[in-house]
Image (tube, helix red, strand yellow):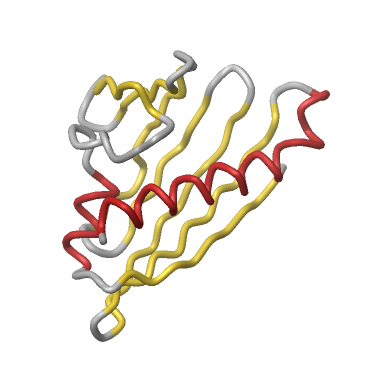
Length: 130
């Protein structure tokens, strides 16, 4: 199991940050995705540019406060928690991923992979918001 956390503040309204992060239709700002397929109101599949699929099942959605989902693909299984807070003129996001590698040989690489993914996501989000 690997846990990775990232906290960032953006000089934006919380509604703009929330809508950007939670939109399943407006994902063009994500540099790592080719598409998102909506399976149901609670489930969606993200496809990387290489065509690799990860299934997400939303477990908590408290608008402008908290967004959580379970995620799974051939290599990993885990849970993601996103906490959103308005801090004056800024919106702070606090994202935590808790992931377990399904394949033994991948366990040493999971933490580094998560950090890399989070860094890319925040970089893309920053470009989308600012």
